[in-house]
Image (cartoon, rainbow, N blue to C red; front, side, top):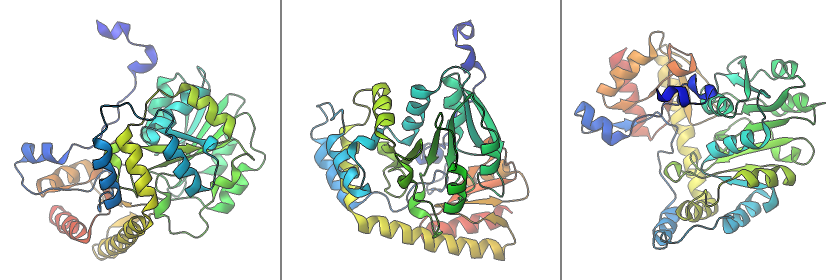
Length: 361
C-alpha cells in the first residue's frame, strides 16, 4: 500500500479545502447566476493599471521571471519605507508561512498558534514535523497573555493573524506592545496581516517599527485589497538576516512575471485601493444593519468578511445558499459549526446574500 511509504507526519493531516470555482458550481447545480462570497476576494477585481501590466507582461511569458523580484522589491521598498533586503517575496503569503517553518523549525520544535485561525499554520507546521501548540481565542481574537504564558524553551515560532481569520477581530497597539516586552530572542513572532488595509481601528499596531528591535516577521498579500488572488503574490518583512536565510530556502522563480508586473502596477494605484476600502466599509455597515434587523449575532470585523452565527448547522445553510446562487463559507473546518463566513461584496451582491439568507432561515 502506498500509505506505508508516506511520511508519518503527513498521514494525519487534513487537507485544506478551498471553495469550488464558480463555473464548476454552475455546472453542478444547473444555475446560471452565482455570486461567490466565500474566499475574501476583492469584489472590484484588480486595478485597471494592473490589467494593463498583465497584458503587457503576458507577451513575455516564454521567458523565466526575474528570480530576485528586483523591480517589485524596489517598488515595495519605496512604498513601505523599508530596505529591499528586509523583504521576502512569495507565491502568496502562504508560501512565506511555509518558508518560515522550513527555515527555522526543526523536528518537534513548538509552534504556537490560535484556534480558530488560518488553517495553513497547523498544516504546514505538521508537514515540517514541528509541534503545533494550539490555544483558543479570547473574545474572538488572539489571547496574547495565554500565548506568552505558553512559551517554552522549545518554542520557535508564534503565528498571530491580526486581524484573525476567520473571526475578523484584531488586537491593538497596547496589547502588542505588552506582549512583546521581554519576549525571548530565541523565537520569531509572525504577524499575519493579510487584511490590514481594511482595518478601521485607529490603534492598529504599526508592526514595522519592531523590525530590527524584536524577532518579528510581518506577512502581507496582494490577494485581498489589491484583487490579485489568482496571481498568487505576497511578501514578508523581517530583519535582514532573517530574510536572507529564508531566501536560501525559497525556490528559484517562485513568483511568476505576470504577478510581479501586476503587483507593481497595483501598488502604485492608490485610488483603486481607496475605492476598494470604501466599498468594503459601505457593504460592511449595510450588512451589520440587516443582520441586526434579522436578529442574527455576528462578530464585528476589521476585515472584508463577517462571521455570522446562524444558530443551526452552518454547513446546511451553506448548501441551501448554494441552491439560491450564493456561495458562502461554512465554518465546520474551523470548529464553528453554527457559523458561516461571508465576504463583503458589491452592494448588489450584499443584497442578494441577505435575500438568500432570509429565504433559507
